[in-house]
Image (cartoon, rainbow, N blue to C red; front, side):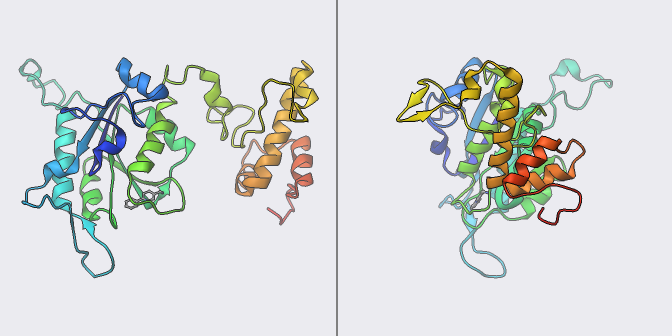
Amino acid sequence: MRIDIVTIFPDYFGPIDADGRVGASGPLGVSLIGKAGARGDIDFRVHDLRRWTTDVHHAVDDTPFGGGPGMVMKPDVWGAALDDVLADAAPTDAPSSADAAAPASATPPARLVVPAPSGAPFTQELAAAYAAESHLVFACGRYEGIDSRVVADARTRMVVDEVSIGDYVLAGGEAAVAVIVEAVCRLLPGVLGNEQSAADDSFGGAGGAMSGLLEGPVYTRPRAWRGLEVPDVLLSGHHQAIARWQRDEALRRTAANRPDLIRRLAATGEGFDKRDRQVIAEAGYPVDGESAAL
Ligand code: JAH
């Protein structure tokens, strides 16, 4: 997979060489993602947006039409940057493929991701869709955002997603890109190591027993710590009882922290069994066809 990131703060992502390749530190250089990059499973390229400025001051922003606070990022600079990054990743075909039957481009199209507080929610489902792409380009905005015509223009030739990682405002898109890249890359084959972990996560990406629920509590040794015991059922060896207890805990935690997820699951076909409904009711969120509590 190829991942390009365009930003006015390339250093945010770690040490960057002359070709935009990332070094062995920073959010793209460490841990599982760093190893995937070092193996060549992911080709990260970070680009300084100011490279595409043409004025002496290297200005990337200007005052907003219509007034208001702050500054807006200039469309001409972003347009040139995205054109070059996309052209560089999709080089024109070699002379050998110049015959009429050859496709215009052998390179699969890139998908453009623009983090913004006004974007659509970034979800585990979207992370899985991104993990199936061969090329992602991230555009990091700063100030009050990027001139809206940049996304409108890019949409004439590629899929563009304006995404939000949560209801809060950052100083720019860089931290959101680090979050999205981590959520996506851990889903790539060979990146996580333990392939089962992704399916058992909160939100249960692979649609297992915990699909759509938050994860319950987890424990390791010692069995007793500071007077707190690991729940007996986890030491019982009764796999069915353990699975049921874990689902109960997942339901309790989801009802307490994310009643919206309980509501969503109640509305789907898979739904809840009798025990599920009992646990949810005890948590204060009765689930039955008549309930107005949801
Ligand atoms: C802020 C450009 N959903 C989190 C998020 C993502 C992006 C931004 N803020 C919050 C942001 C300023 C400029 C992007």
